[in-house]
Amino acid sequence: MAGRIVIFGATGYTGEHTARALVGHGARPVLAGRSPERLERLAEELGGLETTVADADRPATVRALVQRGDVLLSTVGPFSRFGEPVVDAAIDAGATYVDSSGEPAFIRRVFCHHGPRAEHAGVALLTAFGFDWVPGNLAGALALREAGDRASRVEIGYFAEGRVSGGTHASTVRAALEPSFAFRDGRLRAEPPGLRVRTFTLPGGGRRRAISVGGSEHFGLPATHPHVRDVDVLLGQGGPHVRAMPLISRALGAGLALPGVRRRLLALADAHRRGSTGGPDAAARDEGGSTVLAIAYADDKSRLSEVTLKGVDPYTFTFEILAWAACRLLGESPPPGALAPLQAFRLGLLREGVRQAGLDRRGTGPRPTKVGITTYSA
Image (cartoon, rainbow, N blue to C red; front, side, top):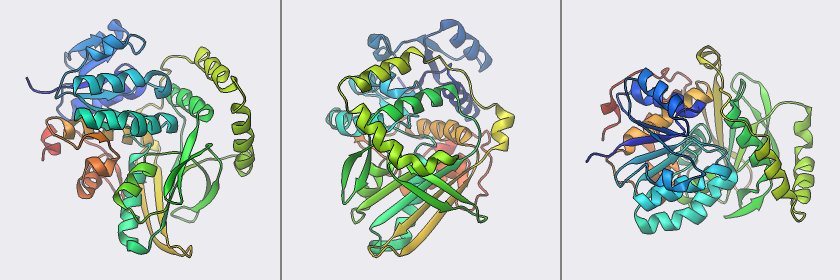
């Protein structure tokens, strides 16, 4: 039996739009989630797709979703709350796993905890395969390639405009309460989010501040570029509080280290978490855009190269790159273990996937269009 693409969380904002992107590319994914009524409505609208009910709080139902050869695409966040059973299900079944998480603590757990088990089982895990954090992996790799072996540090900044979905907001709140990390002096180190602030000059001359976050770049770029000693990933932020973020970060980290504080705050966040509340509609996404910069530096802090990717709204990019990855992985045998983008796809192929999803170096990448699924064939 041929493998299938299964979307867990198909009726949420990201899941629904990713399903639409997949259908637009000629795929017929299986839609999975908690609400049979909402699943059936979406399935009918998308041409009579197969549906199945599953709930992360009932892990056996998630395990029943997939079998060997399937691609399990998870969009259910916060991932630190709901993600573990989905990763376990993929490993146990022998299915390739892809998710849309941007949460540092969950990303680190996939690489450090689930990765070795997945490698032993011959299963590939691709976490954080959306706007968080695919473009930075590509931009960073291009900058490091152009800089050559003199490069010892790469700095990556993400910038976007527009409102966020309910799922993104819930994941952001949880991520602020969870430990984060950085890649400093040649190794992964624990570090609270927002500990460092950088100012980037954007194309056209504007200047934006950004705060440090943990991304998959911290795993992927050192693995593919062993001479790199430091990887900085920073997320653009506005408002007067940004200057004070290092102090806020240290104070929050100290408070969360007190016995029971983190657990109680996470429980409070979960108690006030609502279900999917939607996100920007098509018109708002069409008006939006995004920029990702990567700058490579030498040991003496001299700038060696700079790469800028520009294009569509982050959500549009996420829907399309998830669809691209799922289609490309179906029937393929990627390397086993937890993989960053450049460990799963060669540089040229990833660059083309990112371009098709709406971001490229010149900022003139195409708006995602409906094309045949064979676009993603080897």
